[in-house]
Length: 288
Image (cartoon, rainbow, N blue to C red; front, side, top):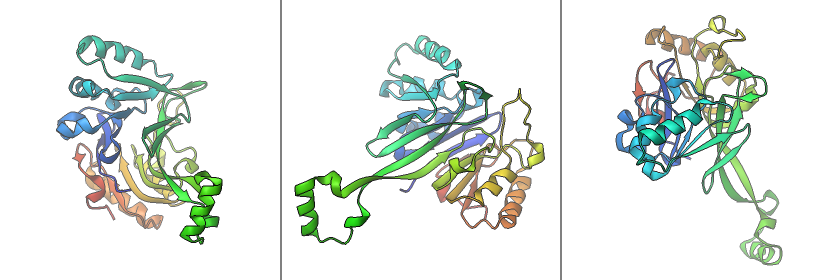
């Protein structure tokens, strides 16, 4: 599936990614509606990764403009901020009460369209034992396909089988992971990201030794770790974002190129520049 992805992601300031064809938004930082304008109305499902303000403050204007379309906002079930946000939004914009708020558990699946499933995956950004406060998301496209053992049968043979044993006997639902959104998270299990068409991953820091893993701190990834991981799994396209504004953009791009060469990465690699919104990311120039 071809995806038109728009996004902005600079650590501490704002993060959001909108996918036009899916009507889906991942996180909702500042500048969401100001950059998308009327295209914001295509968004019907908003998946928030965690309750940091740079990932959700764009919800206020989005809801004021498009609450009448009855969108759904999904969030980690133990992130307590969202019940207060819901109450505030309903009081602040009483004419826009169509918005639904849904708390998600680990591995909860949401069908956003007939053949599109979004699955919540607990991550380690906010690592509190027994509580789900931060999520990554995986997007699957489902297709009804003929089972492998029947591929060589003639049309008449297939019609006969279907008539006698039913369509479910000869066909099966196949899932394809078309996009994975990491949210903010350290890298802890690379299998979570394996076998996806598009991986959108944070890279707050450039080097491993800059990552803060203190118990009382929210945890992030480094570019170095992300590129090492991508060299070990199957991903077709990589979008990097959430870089810290401490880095100059030329420094970021130089490090991406160095790591691409170091890990012999052959897939297209895109990046969200610090402080910039990128429209239709997959149709922009790659770093490599």
